[in-house]
Image 1 (tube, rainbow, N blue to C red):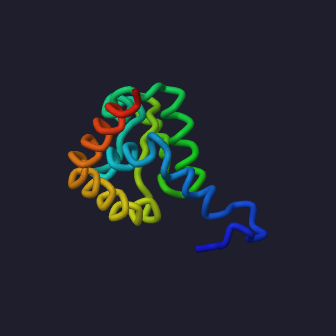
Image 2: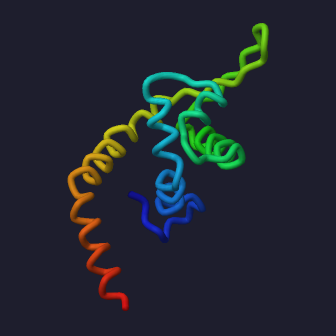
Length: 119
């Protein structure tokens, strides 16, 4: 992992910030089974705005984690698919999902204790 003092303006912290945001894991998870058009992807992500989806998709494309294809058949359509580089994040996101499922009760218990003592 590159050090934070690296001369490169693109440090590991910047990349981590970009893949650990609110929507990245959910978008990549939705695309794991296969490519989706923009509107199908948006419908599969409850609560995401069109602006947030567009910005996140552009960032993921810029970082090489997904590929955007424009088809010009009868109707112009844009389809998104995970790249091989994007697929390498799969095991990391699966491990994080597994951790949350294993520890959700403990986290909820800690929150109740904290909220009860915040008075």
